[in-house]
Length: 330
Image 1 (cartoon, rainbow, N blue to C red):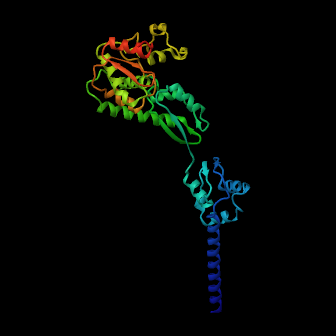
Image 2 (image 1 turned 120 degrees about the horizontal axis):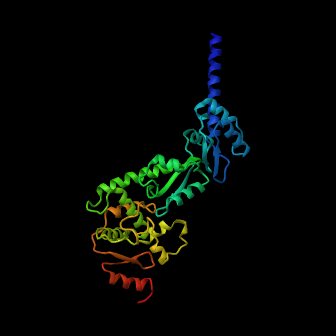
């Protein structure tokens, strides 16, 4: 009987000790880390939770590793941290940090891929981003996607993309490519049924031209109407951005008369109809405008030099607008 009582007392004392230890450990690991400024921390592949605790102790963010080690004995699942780069913020506790690493809630970086830029501009931007791996963005990868036209020009949806450190840039390109394909097909199905485009790809080409011609959202359907009217009348589009695209690296910021006469596949002062591929990445608004132009008889437009344009239905009025806004001859 005395033995049983003794064992019961020992069991009670042990349970009490365990309870007190657990309470102490949880209090310790729930205290805010000693941190005044946000910190970006990277746990490399193959590094264990012990590496994290060592670094935190070295930077005096925790008083000791004892409480953390006991916690990992009590909750071994907290040792299954995932490699990656994480934000450690003031006020965060060790327990919150461990849960964050176990969940793999990595710090996300951003890259803004802007409408109106060309594929080569986007490629350079991704190659220069220090947190992206763009080493596999090559012609072989583009061939795998099999974009119509053989190029990614026009096929990527402009937006701000979020990613973790070291992400393969092909992931972002695939995402942008799929988004544009899906959006274009839907816009094509919902667009005006009577348009002078052979297919959705030609609408994408038109959208890229519209994107380069105006930055004003409200003008895009009107710009689209001008070009659609020209196509219907078998008139040349005569749009400078296509000439610039066709000039490639030879463009120095100026278009000369000889450039307008230079035959290239993209010089719409020389060729009739649309160029063979898009000339930039169009926005969703530009795609919508290409398949939903307004109803108008306008055939010309000229810049007011403030981002907006003057539209005309006949050459006489257009020439008058050119003299006023481009030649300063009122």
